Image (cartoon, rainbow, N blue to C red; front, side, top):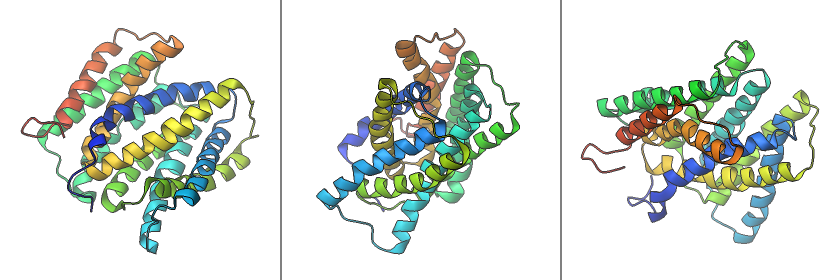
Length: 297
């Protein structure tokens, strides 16, 4: 069980997580121009493991005790690092549009709301259901405005649904069975599992092409530190201290935030229809993340 009082820095975690996670899609777009998708993912995980392993030996943080704790950590790594990201990359490779993939995975908070009472033992009231509905509507408007939704690739659609189920399962599993472990130890286990799955898949499915350019190295560095180390740690910590349905609702803001970052960095325009979508998503988040008395969670 988590301690009664969450750490003070957790107050800024949602904003920092959104900034890192949303910008990761833009940075990933740069890196994928120079490497095959699963090869790039395996390289990313290998870099994380190479960073964390010496830190574990130097700092000697407390390790999880018991087979059950190790199993729980490995399962989260399997669902989030291996399952979600592999299915996401494979869906794009099989012809699924980015807009279609984003629309399907943005349904995650709705699934969390449906499953959380039974799995994570938390109640989703009518106000939060209204917020979830507004959030998914706003996210859909942003996605439809930004890209044509092409879900005609059957295998790509299947992989997109797999990504949705994996991130939903990982969120609920962490909330229900997550163990408190030092972040270096937990991340090393989970990314080790991700590497053990993605590297053989890359070898089997791809020519493992990589162009060692400045763009690839910059993208890789950002994804390793910003997304794989900081953002994932923030996400799992927020899930552990908060309600899964509230935390997962943050994903409604990922498409709007990504659109704004792409405008600033890649000069990708934001169509007029996307702006009301962003407003609806923000309103949905406000409803979901506030307590009945009006104070933010």
